[in-house]
Image 1 (tube, one colour):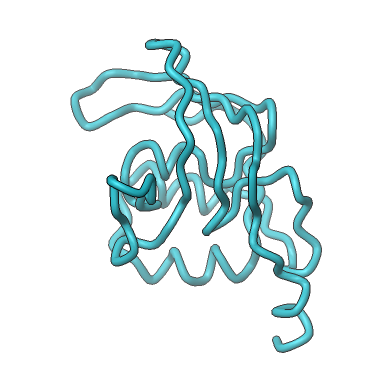
Image 2 (cartoon, helix red, strand yellow):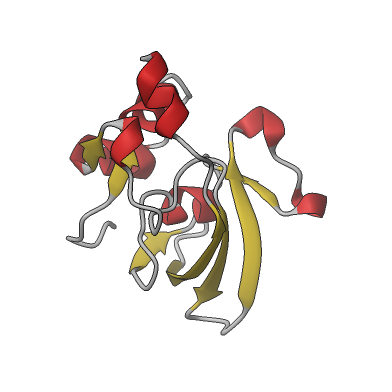
Length: 129
């Protein structure tokens, strides 16, 4: 289940994520995302390696996480894989935006990005590409 909302990805993130073994919902999300050049991403969008605070609408719990690639994931330090349900759901959202996401159990949860604490600087990568 994907909301009919805009998800925004950098071309670099989209390219790297497509190389991963994607489950259907994340693959669908990437296929329908708005992809922008890496140097033009807004600072209010969740990209790879962003550190964000999100609200789980079902539990009311706020959590701080960093969105990472699978090999970098470490739940003890709040590093959540983009292949995990929460990571897949948060990718490409903007501050204040929410999405409904189906978890492996079949449960649908609504996640909303409350704040981006850090987004990696991409401007230097745009010059290199």
